[in-house]
Length: 255
Ligand code: CA
Image 1 (cartoon, rainbow, N blue to C red):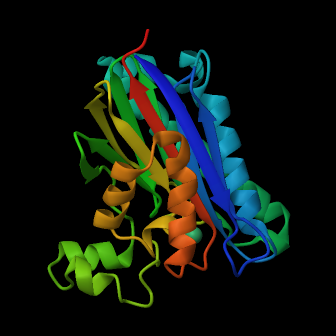
Image 2: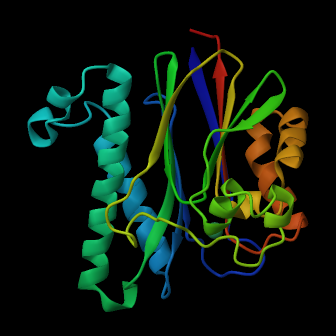
C-alpha cells in the first residue's frame, strides 16, 4: 500500500494569525494536526512545539527503549505504538508547559493534537482535544475520535443531542489539551487499513461550520488532491471564522 497526503490551511476570514499547525510524511506514515490556543500568538507556539515534538519522537527509529522502558512493559506491537503516541503527547505537553513558564506572555497556552500513524496495514490514532480524525471507506464516513469537550460529555450523558450541541455557544470548551493541562490522557485506537481508505484530519475550523454529512458529501465529490482545499473553502463559505486546517490521506494499492 502507498500513501498520498494533501493538506490545506487558512487563517480564515477574521484572524490575522494561524494557530493551527500540521505535519505530513507520506513515507513515514505520520500525519498530525494541532490547533493551538493562547494569547499573544502563543497558540502558534504551542501547536508548533507539539508538531515538532511528535515528529521528532515518532519518526525514524522511534524511541530509545532504555529511555522510556516501553519495550519491556508492552508486548504487542500495536500496544507499543499506542504507548509511544501517548508518551510523545505527554512529552509535547511538558515542553509546552516549560516554555509557558519561561515566557509569561505565553502563560496558559495549549493545543489540541490529532495524530495518525500508519505502519504496515494498521492505522494508529491518538488525539487530545477537539481536532478530529475521520475515515471514509466505501463512501461512508466514520468519526474515529471523540472530542474532549464539555459538550461531548453532555452528549455522552444524554443531556444534549448532537444537533443541539452544534448550536451551543461554548461548544469548544476542552476537557483536556496538550500543554495547558499538563499530563494528558490521549484516546488511542488501532484500525486495519484497506486500499481505497481515505483518512481526514482536521481542526474545529472545519467541523464547526460543516457537519459530518456535509463532509461526507464533499469527500464523495472531490478527488483527494483537491479535497483538503475544498473543505477549507466550504468551511469559510459556511461562516467559519476560526483558523481552518484539513489534511487528507489516501491509501492506494500501488506498491
Ligand atoms: Ca480552532
